[in-house]
Amino acid sequence: MTANTTRTRLASPTILAHLRTLRGSLGQARDALMHYKDDRVDRDKLEPAARRVDDLMNMFVSESRDSRQGSIWVTEILAGVEQITNPKAANALREARAEITVLLDVMHADANQQQPEVG
Image (cartoon, rainbow, N blue to C red):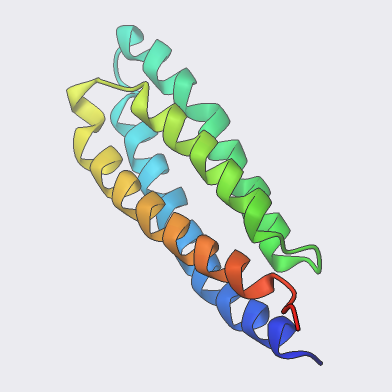
């Protein structure tokens, strides 16, 4: 086992923990938008982001971990979250944004460690 593989395996539990927290925050945001018909548009905008979180979780529990692709998907999730301006979901989305920032940092560091050493 190479050092890069070991680092990736060590980063994966951290990434998965942050993804679980993000999934919870998005769930809270969607729940906050369940009560009124007018909120449906915002709730529907969160669905692709929630599905992408599930895709990321599947990727990081499999052998095909790819922090670069993960960063792209996290950026897509952020774009979905940024579309929502409904104040009913503001607290949950603030938590989601914080989690997204941490995920991007962790995945960026993990992607840099996965690069083959030149020498």
